[in-house]
Length: 618
Image (cartoon, rainbow, N blue to C red; front, side):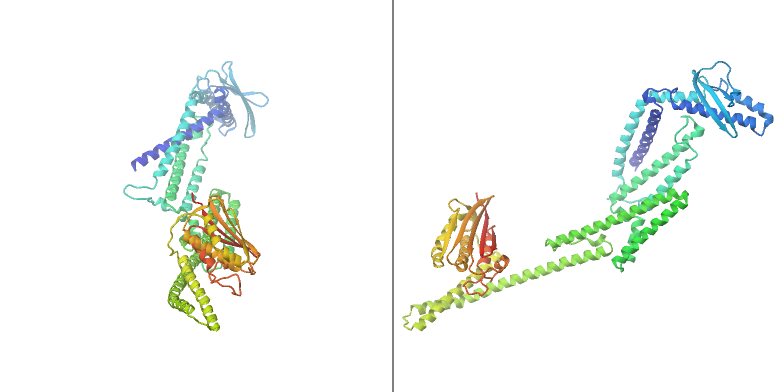
């Protein structure tokens, strides 16, 4: 506390020094000191001479036309004594407009700086012609101000330097003080005093009022002096006291604002905020349109009242203008707060639209319907999260069901396949029976393939597939796969056209799983390609990726989307007349993604295109 008090005292001293030095610098500049001017060439000597002339004219007019005519000679003699050569450096003649000399302190031929003035005092007018003596022997205003002007002029560079250093040090000390405000020994965090708990806008209004009263109370005093030593007309001490009070008041305002900002949420401790908070409670059950209309007309009404007060009572100018500025600033702050809250709601909507259903809005600081809307968005996120969890649970249940059913089917299916094999080995002559056995053989093989596909689809979807990632040449693997399908392509009258398979295209993958992917895609080509057409297969290395493209013409109209084709149990022929389970592409996609690749389809009319992309392995 002692250190803060010492620093604050030093800050006030520096601020007063800087302010005083600035005033002195401005004064010397206005008097032409920096341009080589002297006391004789300054405005100050003319100002003092004019004041002397008015004092002389007033004194003479009062002595001659005053009520006490009997003592006129005594008053004139007193003037002669006051403006004698011993007490005054101003040698003058007071004349009527026709040139008649009424009063003079000439005792000899005078010379110096010439000064003249035309005076209008009451019903009379006078002329004053005079000189400020070259040698200022009498210790009057000319002498004293000349001494002060000369002293300041000789130290003008030092005054500028001291003023600049004082301003710099005061700013630095102010920053240090602001950083230390609010802390107390033995307590953590910012500690608010009683002064800091006063509503900020109320404190600001009182500060402005007190500042205005201090400025108004300085009306009898002159802030810009006629003479530097005019203690009667200038009243330096009262002005200095008022200046110090204003500086202390401003410092106290800066201190409390710094403490409130560091404490946080300073705007909540304001009368305007509390009024809006009260209005929010009153308008909770009103529709948003009515709330807007009422607030708008309340705002217009308050401003209208302030305008009427401003123009009807000029004396309240000091109060009405700051109050109006404070009120409208508060309204602007409230509008900014509402915009910020709308932005937070917009951000929440963007998060939800991006699929971040766990995002929650902090509704504690939201007002009115914004809080309700924020809570609704939170509930939407919670509901969507719950729905997604239920969907995932359903998917896991279906996958587990498929896996379990497939395993349960495999046991009796194995028996059926084995017994069909045994029947085929028997020497059966009946053609009808042989036909039945052939049907059983084909359908049991198809059912076995379907069961295997179901198990593979389940494993691929859940990621429960063992992988051995090694370097695999996609171009070579594609050539081998096409070689395996040569006979099936020939049966379907399909011509395979290979491109860019001569160069190596290494990737990091499991060769067994990649073979299954190619097997499913090429099997799909054989089943659904238009006979007597071509299938185009190509491998391309580009931008650090290896892309395999397979294109063929479908013999069935592709009237479904690629997303639907990727789903399980979906086939391109709606009549389902071809063999297959509809799982091939889904399995191929899952296996590709398990190996950090991507699997995409595109359909253009009857053109069916598959693209597999893997990061190139170097």
